Length: 83
Image 1 (tube, helix red, strand yellow):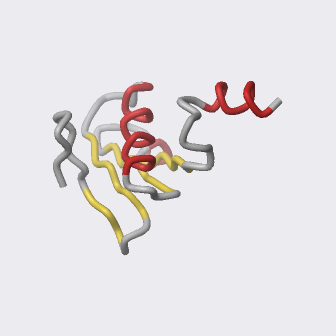
Image 2 (cartoon, rainbow, N blue to C red):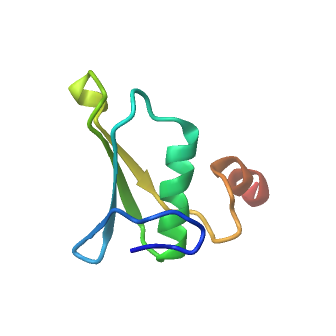
Image 3 (cartoon, rainbow, N blue to C red):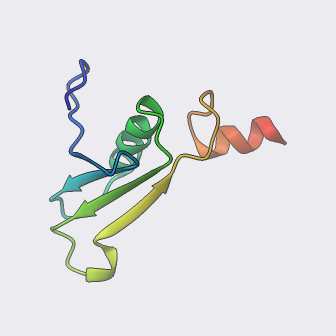
């Protein structure tokens, strides 16, 4: 699936989990933000980043949960607004 902003969603599993596939040495914050944007745009709760270039097997998979309201651009913003 392609978005007009130039990003492309890699895979949606069982209409519930977004899977973002990467092949970078280390995940950057922009990769997490990209997946969180997909979760918000497609109204999904859970997403996974799978990085095939990570040398340590335990670091291949990152789970991101969209548990914040639509107005929260970050976890910090959600906590500050709620508190």
